Image (tube, one colour):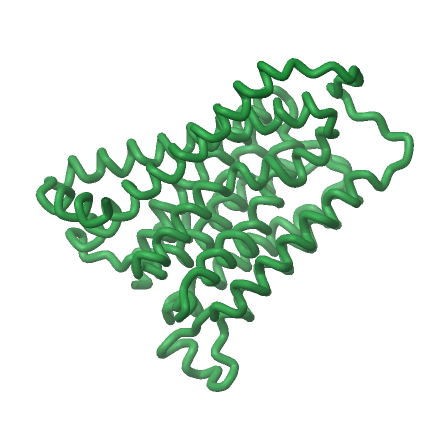
Length: 343
């Protein structure tokens, strides 16, 4: 299928290729939305608290496009897209999506929960940076680049399991807390559950197929425009695969529940490191190459947006103020525009 798509897309003019990319990205976003919606429905039918769903299933669902694109890119010999997608998604999630969510409806926050998850978010960003650093010759980071090894990828996946386990434990740490929206009855409509499971499987299939179409279209477009794969991964693909988080954030904020968007984005950033980068590195014997421009631009931009959000949380009381959203958006716009000059 991959060879067929490559040979087919090579005959497409640039406008048609861009149309294929947009259509694939939209399919990815919609399929991920359905996946999250049906996962929540299934979990509620089984009596799982919504806090647990938000800490695990929602973030896992909305990062599925990043995972599928990055893993398939790595398998097909395009690690630049894989790592660029993970780093770019963190910049996009935290800068663009959180910025929009805060501007639409400044969220009320539980400082205890946000601080705990927020420090893990920042720590994950630094972990990705340190994992890619060529420690035997630090100066080569700015001239040659670095690498996230396959062993590091497996280590990230182990940390992912630990993070999910701890999130579940933390979500149950308040004794006597009753989650709203949980059906306490023991009766389950098994026919409806079967329908939900079928929808879940279809959504997963659409995500994978859309990713398989998106990758060769992006690769050929990058060659036509003389743009490195890593740059495309860190901008266009990163924005597209972050659409589920964007849609979730806008809808939640419009309904006055932007704190849900905050939790989803923090979780998604953590998963972009542990799940997206980890899985992509784990499936390739040579690991993920981190080009030199990541060390003098993309990694610093990623860490900057994470630190600014962390500082904004520190100086917030019960609500994140709109100026924090403005600053995050400015960083995202600057990083996106400047990225094309750091090839």
